Image 1 (spheres, rainbow, N blue to C red):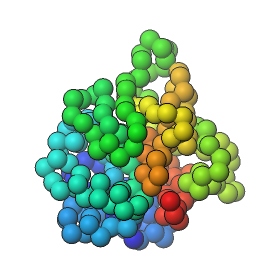
Image 2: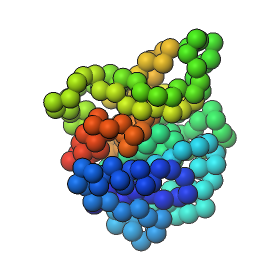
Image 3: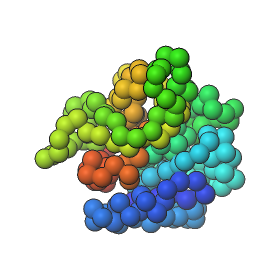
Image 4: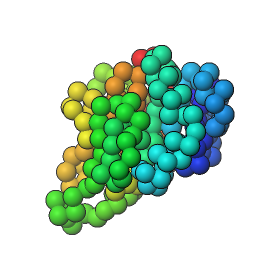
Length: 205
C-alpha cells in the first residue's frame, strides 16, 4: 500500500488514478495514525515553497515523515514535494524537511535564454544506470517526463540519479538512502511515469 500525503497542496487524484491504472493500491490521507503506519510514502506538491511548508507545519506530518525516514521506509517527493525534502529553497525563507542533502535554486534567466521560465512540458531525463528506480523495459530511451517548475534542486553528484537539460543541466532525480526526489510529474508522464512509479513500489532500499 502506497500512502499519498494530503496536506492541501498537490495533484492527489492524478497520482492515485495513475497508481490505480498500474494496479498499485494506495490511500490519500492526512491522518496522523495512518501516516505513522505507512510503509511507502509519496509527498506531492504544487505551488510555492513557503506556502507548502506552512501548511505542513500546521500538522504532525513533518515529524512523522522524519520518523518513517529514520526507520528506512521509502519516501518519494514529486515536483514541489521533492523540493520540500531538501534543506531550503531560494523561493522562500522557511527551512525544508531536510531529508535529502540538497537545496533549491531558481533557473537563471540569462543563462538559459532564449528558453523560458518556468520550465514546462516534456523533457528527457538522462538516467544513472544501476539503480532499481531507473529500470525501464520495452520503452524508447531516453525516457521523457512532464515538468512544470521555476526552481530546481541542486546536490552533490553522488545523490543524482537523473539529470535534465533546460539551458543548463540540472538534477531531476535525487536519492539519499531510502529518500527519492523527482522534479517532474510521473503521474502526468504516461508510460514512463507508470514504469517509474511501479519501480518505486518494488524498490527495497
